[in-house]
Image 1 (cartoon, helix red, strand yellow):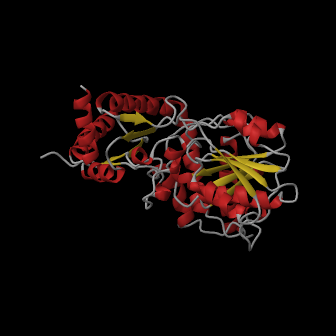
Image 2 (cartoon, rainbow, N blue to C red; image 1 turned 60 degrees about the vertical axis):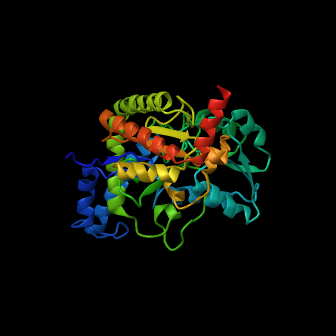
Image 3 (spheres, rainbow, N blue to C red; image 1 turned 180 degrees about the vertical axis):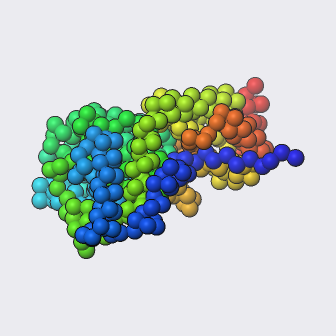
Length: 398
């Protein structure tokens, strides 16, 4: 009897902690346990580790060390970027521009600001999930203080024209933030070349520890304290820093950058292989997101006449871990706001699947998953009255 499969294809939700990152963290969980704000040697050692990690993070995106603020993750970094910045510039204007497909960490922060008197414009996207630079520029007003457009979408993988959008914002004097949680460590990022003023990232998307992230804030961009109670992180985020997590994050960044080019090419080949098989071998399937302007590891497809939840449960039974979209909304019965924004009707959006590959994913894993998916879709359609009606209509048409 063959061994049960255990194929993890949900790396956009979280990744497995790398052993090298864990090894780097261990001293700061045991012997090097000092508070980095303390002045004695144990504290100074922790502070030195913090400073070194800050330098690693800064160099990864072409920033200065003092421009890196460590956070508890991407969600906090997004909230800090929007709320602290909006409040700091409220006297200059109260208008913000974002897109309809942002992560909920941005959308809910915008909703929070709307309740406090700010106005938010939510830009539509095209059928591939791309924000139009023309529409972006048209949305900017004299009272626009901040724009936030994600680097790459966490559900459909589409990579936005960040350099062009950032240049437009820069020319109009608008602060430009990008949620780079899915792109950081996977795609080359230079904050100066891309005209980025604020950037969010998270460790657990690049094989680092959960509970650690960062906000890049360009020097000169104002922002008051987001968490109150101390002067840590240049007064923006009070509280003793998670030294072990930050050290693990830095190690994960170093490894991701060293492997980035080779790993991106490998994952792109697997991605395109999976997409080609799905579209060729499963009828009434469609690719969501841009075919080429997408993250190297992201496959998102919709399958007519079935529900995504049933698909995920059957795949899990066969040993394949996948998702239907953002892990942050996995408890919701509503269809993905991203899929609705790119024009999918509710019934098709409900039948979506996201496969996101990682450093342990092999071609054999991908082929097993696609074979399992074919059987799963066939099984679910066999008991679907919608599919039965569709097939009857096809026979009548013939």
